[in-house]
Image (cartoon, rainbow, N blue to C red):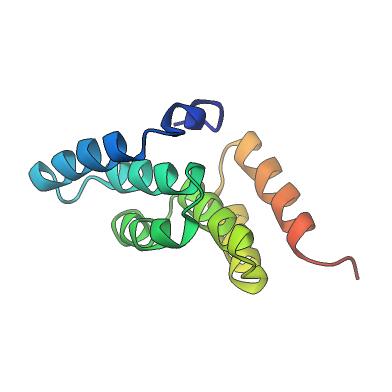
Length: 115
């Protein structure tokens, strides 16, 4: 889901938990469902609750740059700068699409102080 569409989850955390919980009950290896539920937590100001879902999604899809971007953003919001920077570097390593590379570079620059 694009960052623009994430606003759909705002104020609908209960719906997202119910929906993605249902999907995961039927399809426990669906990484997009973990991503969706994690994104819903983040957009509703609960980034700590999102981390387990991002980690699970990454277990299922370890080369997915978007997952590293989103988990890194959750770490950034929580003030975990080193973990965030590590995730943004991983996103850069796996990103094949220009917009993901640019976003990872931007977030990494925001996270790491200038040398």
